[in-house]
Image 1 (cartoon, rainbow, N blue to C red):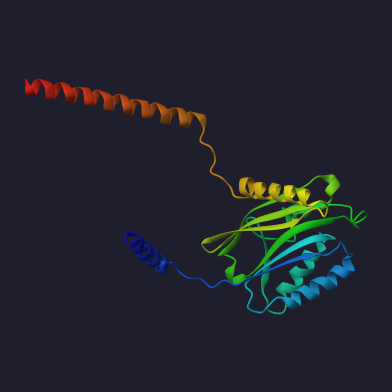
Image 2: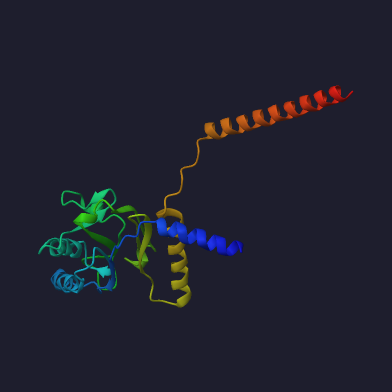
Length: 238
């Protein structure tokens, strides 16, 4: 009986929540660190695959030759009436931003075909203009596995879409032994849980001391009241 009432209460609460139809299209692509000319063709191919009904586009890349791929997609997704804008923490990515600001959250490195040009593991989000106020990037955090691993690691992003919070994690793990990959996966999970999602700031020491003092004063007052009430009850009965 209690379970039925609880289920009914949950159903009532869910019925009162505003339902929003937000269509998110997600793709992950290992590009094998091709040159810029090849990546331009890849970006055009990718843009052609995005369905017309998509409102938010999430692209995770591994072994990309550089930020140029994102810039090409910027042009392709904003042209032809598609109206997409790439997001960063605090708003849209702007061309006047520094390279480090535009690439915040990405993992950079060399090796595996990227000795000269370098490569990166990244995650990026494009959103249609009418959803700019409803879909925002809350945080980004890169996790690399050290210089010897090149660009292997995880690019992570915390996305707020209407009333939902979504953790986006794009990993490029080692191709070595399974135990090494599992250890890297564990490091990614721990990183996301402890750094991507912002935790409440700890209270200052002075505030903690004051709260403890107030607690002690409250307890002392309660003890005094209880003793006074006991004495009063004893004197009244006698």
